[in-house]
Image (cartoon, rainbow, N blue to C red; front, top):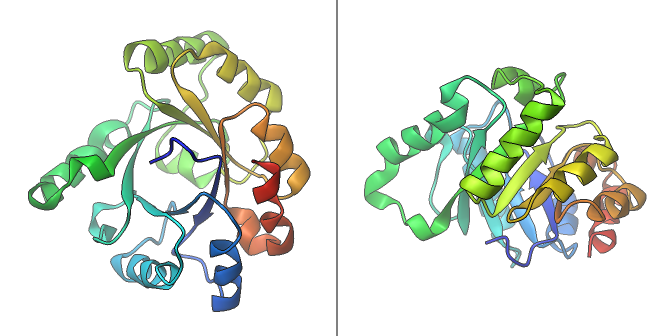
Length: 224
């Protein structure tokens, strides 16, 4: 699903977006629309966004943060798994719940694990998942485990609303041999998109869609 992806726009079903602005996002040239959010995600608002985005030809995926909001019709489903938490609900629990609730209709070709490391301790995602900031040595060891033992195709480095330390992301990428880096957090203009595209394989732009769409749209070309 992500093999040719460089840029992702992430839409939060719990946030309002006009039809005009949604059209601009979907026709921007982004490689993928990812639907997902930390809170307030329901079956109704996921279905609403699904129906609206499906008017366009852009690939569409759902990040499953609540199995009650899962609905058919997406091209792919990503199950987040946070690796810097000791709370098993957010490490493997969502995947187990998804399998329990939807196993009879699951097409395993359409599901991927989304391994996360969340590094913004002030973010909703960090707090909700009971994440912790790993010391440098522990972070490196975790990355080696994810990359060389689990051999995840991708590792999502999440700063969730805040622009991350570019040198940290660069160091993470240089540590990895097999896994590619997805970076999300705080990218709001073409300069930041260009900078993080140098140290990550895929960039995710989310909040900027709602805060400053004009500049958010400019992040697409800078990531290619």
